[in-house]
Length: 348
Image (cartoon, rainbow, N blue to C red; front, side, top):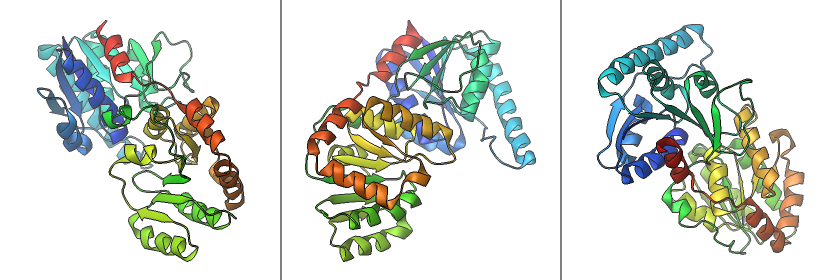
């Protein structure tokens, strides 16, 4: 079977797409992957052997400038026309899109030629591009059991598959917490200023500071945080980049971080308690955090309520009761067979 996979925009769209591409290729299907220039290198480095890569012309439509919005729509339209022509000759049997603006051209081209199309939504609240594309797709596959903001009266079939993660997370799925009072703080690849402002002060205010902290932050904040932790006799490893995030999560008893879809699903795959602080301008992150908290695996707290006093009290209660952290970790655990489920859904 010839399967076209559409991805791009960010790593959050690319890594799940590559996991599914690898699964489908292992089953003997011929894979072609379309992506934008921003993720072209990422795709080529992680694609399965034998898969073809097609570059499309696309960019996000979220700019405030009307001129930039129109230009972005123009690029998406040109790419859609190019794929319509390409599909005329290559005619894939299936199109699988992983959301974002870079998936829209392939979804529309597949609609023109009546090619069965499958769309994946990574967040617990549907994104604008996916909401727009749903009118043309056969099946929407979701990372979370429920998704906010779904169009009313849609004829699209909804299938809960989960979100594919990299193999290094699957290899440690269900591992027990180390019970070493180890806290991991991560705000994503660019860090999160609110975590840098609140977490060190909260730990410094605890009576029992026997916590080891791994704190990932922005490069310009590393030295300042190192100095603060040292002055308050807090054992900490401050760094600007965590190369092996799976091991960092495995070594932690508790995680404090943002709530992007990949972060939340990785926590659920491994099984770790967490305090999630959604980016306050991102409804997707708020929905992701709420879904995680509903499992009983941790807290979803608004940025405005994430204070030094609240966090100090919460950390004291949790680290003084390791059995509670163990129970939260167990509740957070969700088996991840997303790549196989998506491949099954697409090919059956």
